[in-house]
Image (cartoon, rainbow, N blue to C red; front, side, top):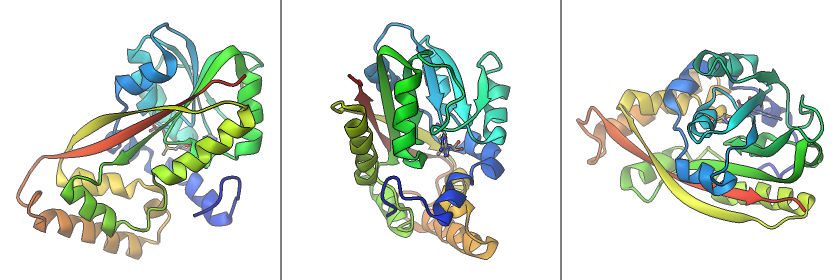
Amino acid sequence: MTAPGERTAAWRARAGSFGPVAAAYAALRPGYPSEAVAFVLGERPRRVLDLGAGTGLLTRALLAAGHEVVAVDPSAEMLAQLGSRFPDVPTRVGTAEQIPLPDRDVDAVVAGQAAHWFDIGPAARELRRVLRPGGVVGLIWNTRDRRVPWVGALDELLSGEIRDHAADQTVVDAFAHLLGTGDDCAESAVVQAVSPAEVVGGIGTRSYVATMDAAARETLLGRVAALLETHPDTRGRELLELPYVTVAHRLAPG
Ligand SMILES: C[S@@+](CC[C@H](N)C(=O)[O-])C[C@H]1O[C@@H](n2cnc3c(N)ncnc32)[C@H](O)[C@@H]1O
């Protein structure tokens, strides 16, 4: 695993891999439970920066909870998808390390499935700069629930996927240290109703798959399709319930 803050060429390629798969990403990745948003932000509407907002899957949950959202992402293609779904949400191309917002502009910064791409030192400085006094940071990840047998078998097949809760926790700990805060965290769940083909397509949007050469990608996705065709819990089913565990971390910088 790449240590937080360590930046390799392969890591950069993966962080930048989302643009070409933006449309598939928007259609095939899971959303976020309202409980995770409420845990991080509370019930009162706030002005929230969705950092690494991508196609707006977390933005959707933030808007549903009544928050005012500004979305930042390095990928113009991902933000174009977000803009087509939520035309009233202002979007800015930018990064966590150089957030294109003024000082003390937001009550909260949230990142869904994105903080492991940030360069933690510069990003923590930027979070402090854009947050208003009393502001909070929410770092949220969905991870496939491998306790379900067919999902466990899928995860075994995808052992090349290098991030999991332990890796996420390392990122959270590093942010908490630099922001001088503890880490409150809460678990919730989300289930995606998807066809077997959509499961395969969603895996194709994972950064480590999107950056494979075409032959390797085809081989891996073929193995995923074969698993779904043969596993006793998925064989012959047109619609599957793909479960995720959502872990939300709330950091309140002093
Ligand atoms: C896995 S996607 C998550 C998108 C969205 N938040 C969601 O929940 O679906 C990760 C996003 O992080 C963005 N990203 C990568 N490096 C970043 C950085 N240094 N600063 C901000 N965003 C970054 C990518 O462009 C991509 O849109």
